[in-house]
Length: 77
Image (cartoon, rainbow, N blue to C red; front, side, top):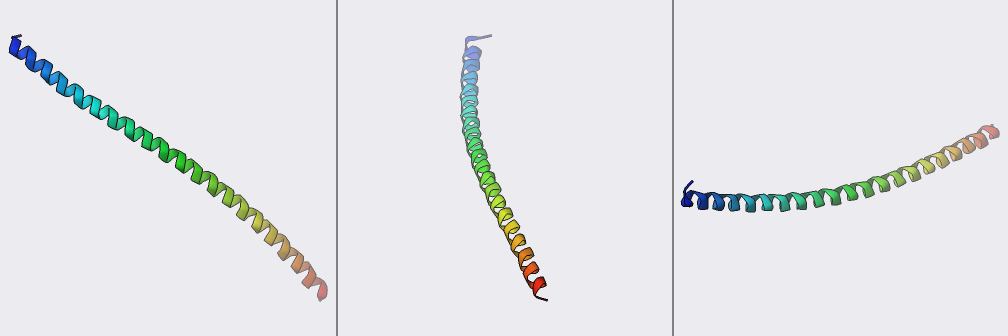
């Protein structure tokens, strides 16, 4: 391998390494963004679960009130 070929190879490797470094930084950035999005999704799922439980409690209370009203109305006849 000539001196010129060796220098070209080293230059080519340096360019390739810079591109690899750039890609790794971009991958790291994307992974951090994905992690942030997953945490936000988890938070939203917990909030949805809390709201569903509250709705379920309200439905049960409404059912009890309807049954009680039915008994009261039924007792009038």
